[in-house]
Amino acid sequence: MATFAQTPVSEWQGDFYLPRRNKITLQEWVRHLLKYKDKRFARHPRFRYVAFNTMMRSEGKKNTSYICKKVNGERITVEELRETIRERNTTLSNHITRSAEQLRGTRPYWKKRSRELENMVLNLDAPHLFFTFNAADL
Image 1: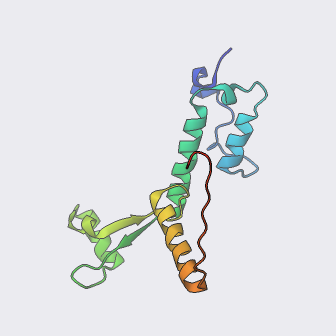
Image 2 (image 1 turned 30 degrees about the horizontal axis):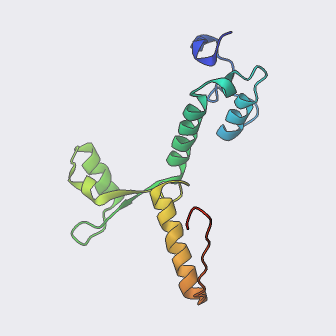
Image 3 (image 1 turned 180 degrees about the horizontal axis):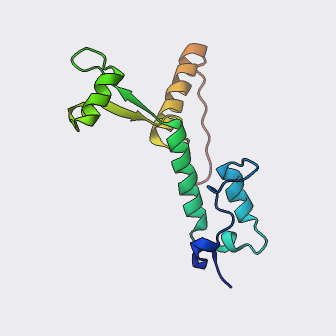
């Protein structure tokens, strides 16, 4: 029995990036492969990790943004940014940061949620405190 990793690329019929009539999402495509008739993708030891990594990279491309800080107190225009890239000048790279607050599971995402929760507690004026214990805590 052949697995997907043993099948030559020229024989692949269901690649996600092939043109198709009906538009599907990456999540739908992975779900379909996991439920495929002979379960070869579900049984494969690394397919889930490859699929998860692919989905996270796709989300990262869509949901991250870049922020450019002011240089010497002045904003940088798009033309200046393009010029520094053309000149391969790396001094501006110290002023550019990447924001990944939209990617679930990343540290910036949870930090943002933590700040939102703290602000809710402060603004709603609900200083209630509760404890939960289980046998492992005692």
